[in-house]
Image 1 (spheres, rainbow, N blue to C red):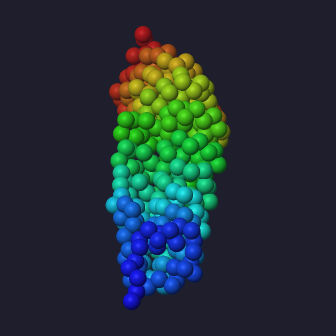
Image 2: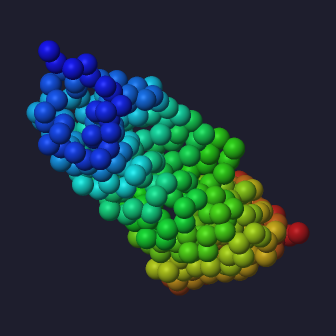
Image 3: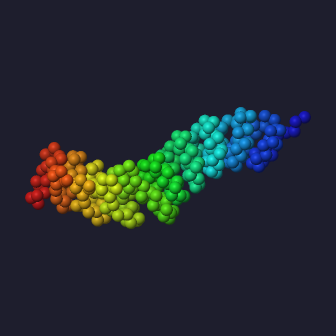
Amino acid sequence: MARPRDPRRLFRLVQEGRLRALQEEPLAAAGCPGPAGDTLLHCAARHGRLDVLAYLAEAWGMDIEAANRDYKRPLHEAASMGHRNCVRYLLGRGAAVDSLKKADWTPLMMACTRKNLGVIQDLVEHGANPLLKNKDGWNSFHIASREGDPLILQYLLTVCPDAWKTESKIRRTPLHTAGTAYSSAGMQACLSAEDSLGAQALHRAAVTGQDEAIRFLVSELGIDVDVRATSTHLTALHYAAKEGHTSTIQTLLSFGADINSKDEKNRSALHLACAGQHLACAKFLLQSGLKDSEDIMGTLAQQLTKRSDVLWGFGHSSMT
């Protein structure tokens, strides 16, 4: 007569990686429940027992998408503990890469709680989305910023350049998170990361009109308000004017931005505001003392607009 199955014994065999002893157990043991609703697959993935994991999935036919009471799948367990061989195996068998556990955490988010670049790369290369948010509004980059590994931060920025500017539900960006964690290396990775045109964090904040992020970058972190994009020599003031963000221009000027700064084509912020037909921006720049001037081709800013109300602003400015 077969002895009754002892769940604790079975989970102990898996935890200790005792594959041969496990192979002597009847197939019916696969349904043995564990703590928190874990399956034996969860246990194998958590402890990095690849041979046991493969045996359970292939010989016993256990479901790699089985969820415990926290909605964790085996992939969450392997990713959170940094067991790259188990992560690769599960992904190879078609595990859902962006499955959500309790509080909406993905395997990639779990991996970002540890400094294991290889696991993170494997997940991203299998389609994991770094921009997905958990219930608190944090994405994987927020979580990685808290840990502060510069190699991981640089990798995530390479595959997803906009990851840095996502705000949580309390309007915290990864920059705030890295600053709170006092991770100088992690912070530097965030700040110095450049896009294809050489734009840095301050420039991207200006493009999207994130005035609070600009205040944090300049006043708290000491970023040069006039730092230039490497390929175009555009400043944050240029970017804000190009997008028509008048309030952002005000913010930058309040921190001492050079209103007369020119890019590599000798264009001022006024040129970009006029080219974009942004009346309020052009008017504010003129009222703040910026004079129209020629760019490298001899073109004045006012020649770039077709709007009579913008042109009126130039005439009015010259009389005041």
